[in-house]
Structure formats: structure tokens, C-alpha cells
Image (tube, rainbow, N blue to C red; front, side, top):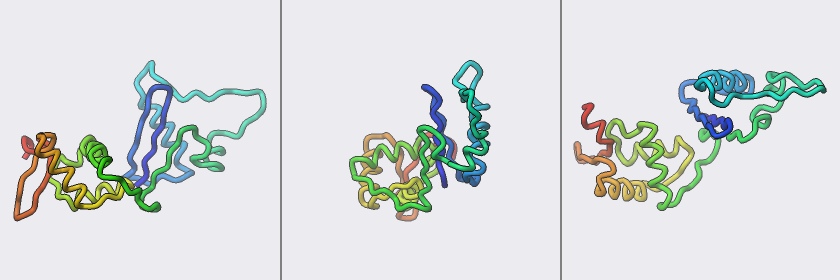
Amino acid sequence: MARIKVKLGENEIEVDSRDFYVDNHTLGEIIDNISNHLPENQAKIVYETESTPKPSETEQVAQYGLDYLDNAEANEPEFDEPISITSNEIKSKLRILETSRFFDSPRTVTETVQQLREYGWSASPLDVSTALAKMASNKEIMKNSYQNRTRYFNEEALVAN
């Protein structure tokens, strides 16, 4: 999985590539397609023109890949070791999973730890379990037991099921 984050002025677009492959040859095309989906009268990618001939965008992307873009971040957890996160950071990472609709269906602690790892973060199952239990006790997330396994989910998932 790769994550592409493009920042255009105050606007920021992030694309998660779970269903498609991104490499240095397709990166420019993906960024152009993303910029075409910005609403009218919003920031656009502007290419400055100079009197000296510059390589085309396709040539730059092919030659330099992500180095050619300002503020480009490459995150490919399947190729990198996950970053170990502390117990204090887990709740904010769980919020990221929540906003990406991960908890729309009931999830176990093991599934949650695996999903965090897919995002490039490593956390102990005990710390994740503790954070989820605290969130459930504060009614930030729902919890139920099924076949002696505790599962955590959003309130909307309860309504949908």
C-alpha cells in the first residue's frame, strides 16, 4: 500500500493506493488526475514557465520520481519496517482508522493491530486493547462480545447491521 499526499496551497489531498499500483512512471498521471477533481475556483497545479527549456513533466517524473515533487511523502509500509508507536500515540492512530471507516464493521484487537501495521505503525496488542477499552468506556466507540472475542465498532455500524 502506498499513500500519496499532494498539498496545493491550503488544500491537501491524500490518496490511499490499496487497489492500484503506483510507480515513478504513473505518478505524474495520478497527480494530474487528482488535480482535475479539485472543485472549480480552488487551487490548481501551476507550472511556471521560464525562458530556458525544461524537461517535460513526464520526463521529470520518470527521471526523479517523488524527488521532483515538493512536500511529497512516500509511505510504503510493505517495504519498510513499521514505526513503533507509544501507548500515548495509539488513540490518535485509532482515530485515523476510525475516519477511514475501519471500524464500520466490528473489529478485534488483533485485526486492529494488523491494520495499524498496514498503515506503517507497530504497537503492542496489550496497548491497543487498553486504548480501545478506554475509548469504549468513554463511549467514543462501541464494544460487544461474540464467541468470547471482544469486538470494537462505530455506532453507525450498529445501526447498519
